[in-house]
Amino acid sequence: MTVHSASERSDRNDKRERILLAAERIFARHGFFAARVSEIAKEAGVADGTIYLYFKSKDDLLISLFEQRMTQVNEALREAIAGVPPKDQLRAFIRAYLQLVHDEPGAAEVLTIELRQSSKFMKEYENPQFIEFLRMLGGILAAGQERGELDGSIPVHIAARMIFGMLDELALAWVLARQPSISTSAPGTRPKKFDIVRAADWVVALVTNGLTSPRLAGSAK
Image (cartoon, rainbow, N blue to C red; front, side, top):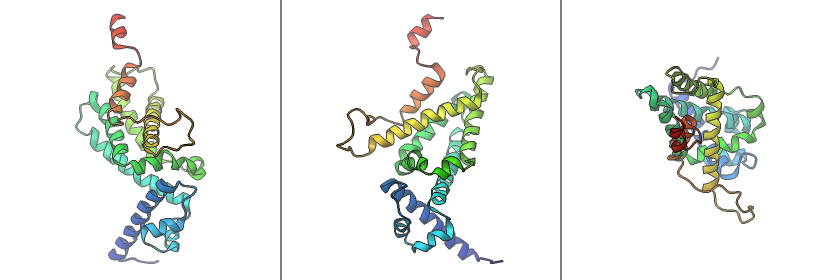
C-alpha cells in the first residue's frame, strides 16, 4: 500500500483542482465533444498523461466537474435558507440558485449544455448531488404544504422536479442569450436577454400564484 505524505496529498489535490477548472473553461470554450484532453492538460499546466492519473476518461472528468459544482451549489443553497423564515425559504432558495448561475456563467454553460452531451452521464450516472438538491427543495415545499401555503395535492417530488425544470430552462436561455450572435441562426430562435436574478421573483410568483391575474384572482373570491 502506498502512503502519501501530507505535502504529496496537497499537491495531488491541487493538480486535480487545476484540471477540473481547466476542463470547465475548455468545455465552455469549445464544447464537450470538440474539447481535447491535450487542450485541458495545457490549460491546467500538466502533461497530457497526468489527466489519466486522476480521471479515467473525458466523460469521467465531466462528471467529476458536475459533482464538484453541485456540491458547491448545495452548500450555497443550505447557507441561503439557513435562518430564513419558512415562508421565505422558497424565494431564498430560487434566488440563490439563479444568483449562482449569474455569478458563474462558464459553469452554468457546462452544466446546462455540455453535460447533456455525455451519454455516460445521462444513462449511467446515479447523480447523488442532484438528488440532494431535489431533497432540499422538496423539504421546503413539504413544509409549505403542511402550513397550508402550497397546494398539498401535488406530490412534493414531482413539484421539486417541475421547479428545477423551470430553473434549468431559464439558465439555458440566459446562457444562450449571452453568446455571440451567429449569422446563420434562424430569426427568432435565440432567446432574448433578461435579468436572471430578477427572474427568481417571476418563478416564485408562477409557483405560488400561477398565471392567473391578481386582479381576476381577487374578484373570484
